[in-house]
Image 1 (spheres, rainbow, N blue to C red):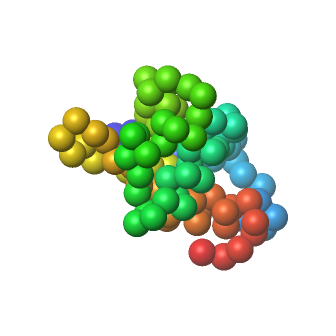
Image 2 (cartoon, rainbow, N blue to C red; image 1 turned 120 degrees about the vertical axis):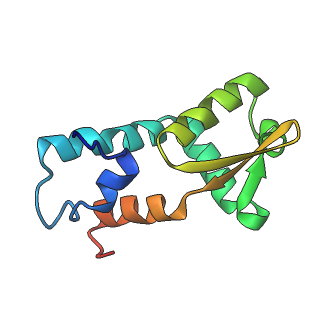
Length: 116
């Protein structure tokens, strides 16, 4: 049985970069998280959701911050969700997003060298 870890699970079990080198498979597993955040729109969306009052934001709360269509914003949110950085919950016609603070903390510890 081949149990593949999600990017969030992979980053959670890696030692900080400054402690020991990543294996090739760990680097492959973590890259989707970094790739998801590497886009300026997605990085900003992540920040807007994480800092929004109550810790969650609706797509309707985020549209005004960008000169982009609602489907484009939703596409970027879908990528962040797919990478495991956001949780989502549908309420009526709107989708609400919440930052996965555990994933962000593990990513910060990996890069910053802090123990988790």
